Length: 346
Length: 276
Ligand SMILES: Nc1ncnc2c1ncn2[C@@H]1O[C@H](COP(=O)(O)OP(=O)(O)O)[C@@H](O)[C@H]1O
Ligand SMILES: [Mg+2]
Image (cartoon, rainbow over all chains, first blue to last red; front, side, top):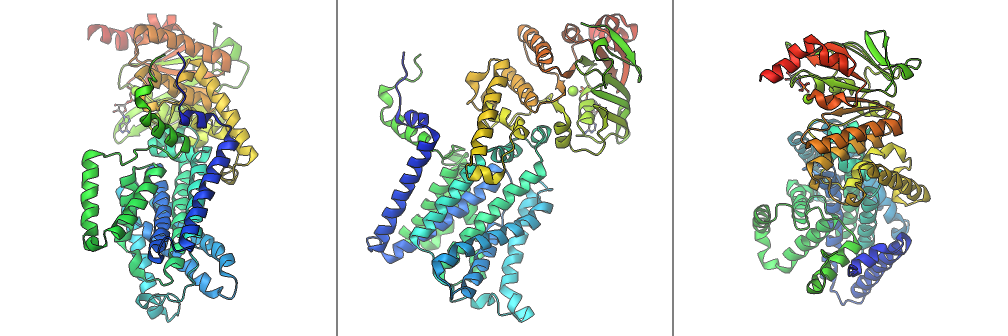
């Protein structure tokens, strides 16, 4: 008997080029809509600020997911890489303020990403030799060092660089709903494209079994470092967007709790699931804003949600279910028409 | 099956391989763990298309020999020549690229990846597109992926596993996992394949089929295979040469018939097993 074709299955059978085109068109449509809504004040100014924050947090979550979900490491200092990216691109944008902002901004973001990746390289090479707990401790220490250096470098060395606790001010606020989501989309695509290649499979194989990976000819040291640096790079970009969103930076924003907040998103979404990270980032950014009155209890809610997750759904919201529009369609359509379809019959 | 002829290092290899560089030569190979000498004076030479059995009771040191050959453990003594090249100081990954591939006694698959992805990891170096080319989805990416995927399906065909391609490796039945591990190793395009108890946990008919397939793999790929097994009846059928290991030392080498009738082997190995 012929299997009933679902929307997802049909989508999957389309030529790859066409699928890419459809995905791009859908994403463009989303961008245009959300920008139009924000520009015409259908979405209020403060809500559009929340949207930007959502985009930043999406990048943070999917980038941390590269190191935890895909590479299988447990870094606890993601906010440190974000801080490096934020300050780098903020300083760049301040000094480049004579030039058109929308032109300089991408450069600033990439510069922030690169410097963060450089820090990732310096931390990663020694830290990745150690397993599990040690990596967590080293990255945690690193992010605290970064925070303390940013806080004190001016008063100790007499620079006028980060302005420490007095905050780095007058950063051009170049981040918009449009470019924030554009970058979020670009980052998600790059990670997706990287993971669906021989390089991504090498990274995943290390997570699953390092000895076997090595025995398949994979240079595990190289790919661990690559995964870790990619994770840091995108965190740096998120930092740059964050700087352009806020216009003012102080080291307090990049403390240990920020790293944990990002980690919670990844765990909640399901380790190794990009779609899960995105959903969790949206939910955990939007919810506290919607429930302003309870903002004092945010960390309590986080903890309770995490504990509940561990008990009821230890694999996370999406498990390791990966991002694919075809799969998503298939799921939705299958569910809707479930009583009509008997896939098991042959 | 061709006749075995003697070579230096007190080994025998098939006559058809005798005039070519042996694929593997070990001299005085040994390793100590603390005070315990796990392997010592391990001398073995293998012809380029030979199937050799490495047998011995549990704890004899067979797996340790594999770990030495693949540099998972650093030898305390001795040398290993792979295709005439000394492998000292090479990493396991480099050795794989030089032509050694292996499976593990306790299966080590990439459990949360699909069957075909497992094989594709083995084919990593068959593709040569760069990271940038994959992110930008340039033609070299598509070409490389397509060729590798076709090759992966070909390999899966050896064990008729094409229809499992998109299943998670961890969800396969035990026997299929063992077979997939062999395919993943084959994907790395080895000239020497090391199989650590490939029939463990299989029933007799599965085992017979596997042994036949191992012979077929040797014939189609023209490679050498070193096979660990502790039940020596299993390997008698397909191995040309057999080395018997006991307490880390080779106690006998020769053809299956010679091994079967060797009194020392019967004493140290079969005798004990029959008695126990
Ligand atoms: N990493 C190690 N550390 C200490 N002893 C080891 C190690 N690996 C193997 N051994 C010892 O070496 C001996 C041979 O083990 P093994 O090679 O696994 O035997 P076989 O594969 O023949 O059953 C055993 O006594 C085992 O305890
Ligand atoms: Mg063993």
